Length: 261
Image 1 (cartoon, rainbow, N blue to C red):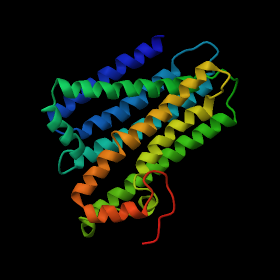
Image 2: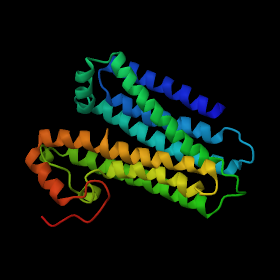
Image 3: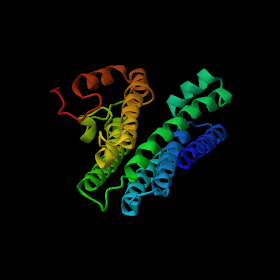
Image 4: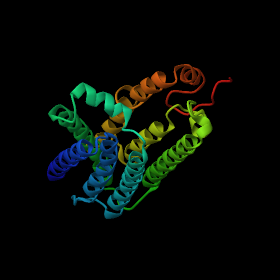
């Protein structure tokens, strides 16, 4: 299908550009910024791609929602990377394993390109649900995405404010959303991908099953691969006692009331 070919080619091109930018700038933080921006824009284009029986209002809604997510997250990550005093330590460790921003690093980024294709398929499957007119399922999907964008933006602002205060040097952020989840930004990033099953999943419609892998993949990646494990390892290296105390009190991923000190 042409839309799948488009998503694959565009994702490879975007992550190849991310590899070139990171190599030139010497900071892997640009990879995440370009990944988020490209995922949002490629998925928006795929949502609008013509399809028999598709309802344009639903396609436009899906495209708008996913573009908002990608542009907001990509812009924030680009700003954070540009303002950082040192390169992203997660990518610095990976770069040391790769031996620099070489062909091995490029192949790793092609895995990230593949994840974009999985995400695009979820948005596309939701966008082309043929039911006439927007309905309560579309409203629910929009509410989920807007809540996720707002929650992630709030978590990012709270963390930025914490880091700006010199009195917090060496401490662990445990205020606001960060007092309910050790990774509220990752939680809300995952929440975005529940919107597409909400918009379109129907066990009787085979194509709608394509809305599920994105949420499952993002939960696994964030919790077991590139999100929580890498960041927590870095925090345990930099401030072990404070972070272990934080781990004992605050939920790892899902926002929950913290345990008493």
